[in-house]
Length: 574
View 1 (tube, rainbow, N blue to C red):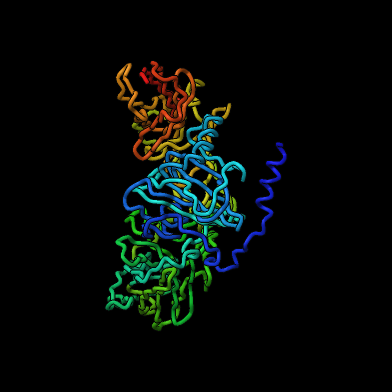
View 2: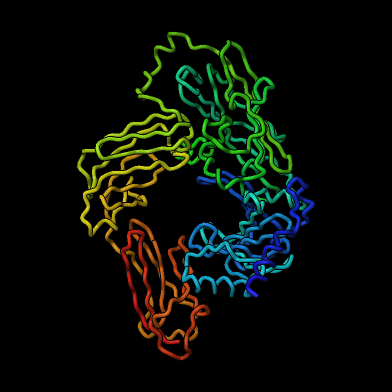
């Protein structure tokens, strides 16, 4: 009957999809938790290099709460990862949605048996399999499919929950589907940034950018600045603040942001949907330079040339205000959450050209060299070094230079070192760099580009040319990693583990990072669960095929990205 299974699997998808033009609340999906709803994170929050693609349900500061399927469907994908989403399930539903449940502590017994069997079949501890069909793990509406946890890159016990469009795989704001989640708290505005967008534009009689603190005007959600802002030329703006929720101490991201000047909407965006293909463009939405410097998130209300986000509902002149005649302008930021709780900041611009006497006192403009179009491919070479960028590598038009570094090095390099200088604090997409190495054949597999003490994944061809994908400027050179990872196993030889449920041990690597981790009991591969944030690996006996009341031989093998291997052996009785 092998073909019947495929036919039934395909039949699952022949059911008519509900279009997402329907009101999401009409889908009538269940909540994934049994406990009172409290959120620690909302959809679209600004995170490191990505938007938050779901909502985070608090689980009363503990793990082990029931997680339920929001609708009938089947587990189409499952992951057991040391970081990221950790233990995670993806349930595909016949209504056109896929629900995602992340940072779990356990799968339900039925699901666990299928997932762990697949891991055994693939001999994969770092596991992410997306090809389960509809007959392997069907689930009913409201069925307990997992227990909440703190696995992966979670900072504390909670459920990260997503609803995706099955066809596009875009993440949708789950609050659209749950009208029973009520919030009456207004967002909060803390500051704005004002940017002189070119060398002939000024803020407070200076080039560059200035930040201004917002002050609440009572409790009505209105904010003001201490005084008007003097500007001239092409001016951009940014905003900092948070959403709040009723009864919660957490802070959240804005759902809707709008900027107007003299009643002209310059910028408006809404966070209903996130595409994983463009989530990295968050680094263009925010003032990335300010984030790297002060850890503060300022959302720019102007759009970079190579920003591909589809969150914008209205733009005028890419959000840039032209202050080109002596006058005043009344501007307003309005921010709101999904439930239309709003806050606003009104401020005044004084449009004044700079007097020659003021202009002469300004610092001289730095020499930036030639500017290049970010929408064109770019290639550069110097000696044996090359840098190649696509028309999607940079967010804005850019400057570029590179030079060989000849100052004495504190470690051994197997190539010349080159310093890349550009006005781009981070790249949109990786650029490619290459350099000729002088490595002996025995070290080629151990070689990596190094930047600022960090390893960069590297490939080396038969001619000894090293290549890597990079997203930052800085100094790059080839080093080698010949040091094996470290395994710390506190287990006495011959220990009696009859009453133990697992063996745990720590692993670490000092440069290239952990590449693989495997364990063998009596020379037979067995499952491991690795929690990268605690550097702890667990070997659960329930997944090991052991003959009882016997002495067993354990062998642990851990390799880093450069292929250096550490081995630890022990014996135990169980």
